[in-house]
Length: 524
Image (cartoon, rainbow, N blue to C red; front, side):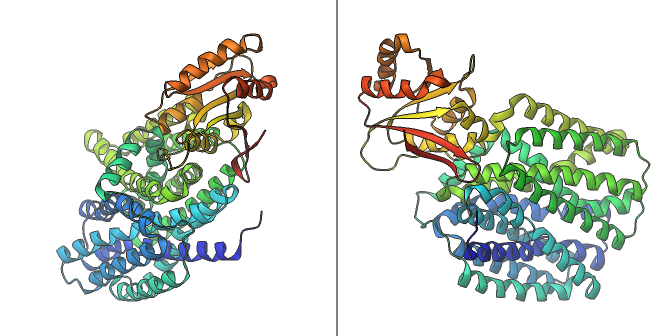
């Protein structure tokens, strides 16, 4: 599959913008350490403020991206970021630096705008890899940090240079970026943000992503302080080690997205969480020596990177293009909040036990629980975080859709999304071809989640009693339910043909899934 040159250019510009903005969001760290010599406790507390701001603004920025497009929102975010880092350069007191540094958390919203744009411009089969490539903006931020540290350790003059670069990038983004989905007003901003927050709080995928991406961001933000305080490493060497770890995590996210484009993801995520739990356990037993701890933390970051890349790919694949901004907004907000969780747990465990080992074991237990959850729920994780289907204006028709069990196993998110959009408009009966004893549990759960106003029922169907079963299915359809006719895989096409006669269907469609193209309807 060849990606058009314009798509590649768009992705490269978005990645550059993410790097510049991420650098802006972490610029408060050098200011605190070099200009005001903030103690470890105050440093840890204050560098969490930009993350908190990022968590608050990412949902509304995502919703606004759906309304006005990335061509408007990426320059807007970059200009706000430029003003905040210029304020950092001008600030002459610690309170002023804290306020300007917290405002720089708005720069983290570039992840939302660029992620939504990547999900829209990339084909289904390249979406995971493309989102992973977009995540390499972290590497851009690390490279800028390394260069600026050499010439300006305090970060004061670097702030003015970065502000100018962000302003220039805003002009570049406005000239180059094109959003393939037309922007349109969609009701109250506050109401839609509230709906997205409720949606995120009702799915376990949010917690899984919080653990994965939150682990990476917390390592990037707090590892230098940990290595300095716990392992006695110098500040510059701690920053260098943290930069290497962050680059490894970004590469791992790329690998996780690439894998998700090709294979089911639940097992990969389970392995990553289990391996990270094991590494945390190893870390609890090690002495506080930096050359022992850094490889362990790097391994944890790689595991979190692969898991977060895989989960972000699932989320990007499940989101409808017109809602990609809102979905990425709530995803990014969860990730930013997740970065505050590990430090809080570690601080609490150390305060109670006065032991770093207890803190490491607590994080190991948390990730082990996540691994067990993913292992027991399997494909339900693959449904992704997706907004609910909304009916489009148009005539209603009676449709029979044929779906085989392999399609739901390989592409649960895409299959559910297509069926839900169809059910939001048509009277729909799904003929599900299953093996012996199999039920459409994952697909039915996904449809219930996407269509909260629909009743979803599964009816076993056999050829000898097809007439009676057709009457029952018709009654369900008349009552406004979404009916799933479960039949042996070998009979699903013939059963669909006969049901079309009994139910006087307007059309019969077959739903197929391929890793390259996603889920598509075709005539039977």
